[in-house]
Length: 174
Image: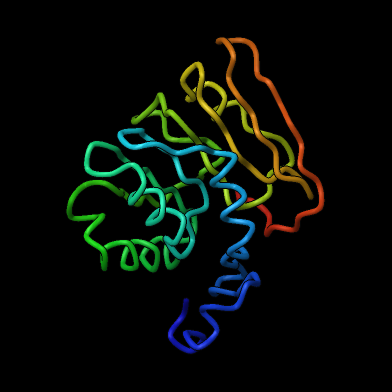
């Protein structure tokens, strides 16, 4: 949380973090992580990493043998998130890496990923994410006003499940 809002850290609501972006409501993050099913040793792409909160949670789960690649398009938020995750040693241990780029394009350099989590609403799941996901992998992403779970069954087949009734900031693309 930004310094001037630390007293609200335990409130179960989405909170502004600057640059027109928000930290998602804790219950929503918990729901998304349950759908994602992160495990120790996995490589996970975290799109729209913002404050670094989900990246830190994922880094703790994947452990020292795992890796979280965190993408954030807004430079100030990339720095904010990286500093927050660094407080817990995830950056220097190499468990979390923060990159300033357009997350809708994924991150080909580190693919394929076991899992992909997005924290901003896209209009559709980007083809780059589908391509950069391992068979058997999962994508959890807001699409419009729903959270979607995509499970890659084969190179050409995705199982989809929609969970409606959510509000997210839009995914910013270049």
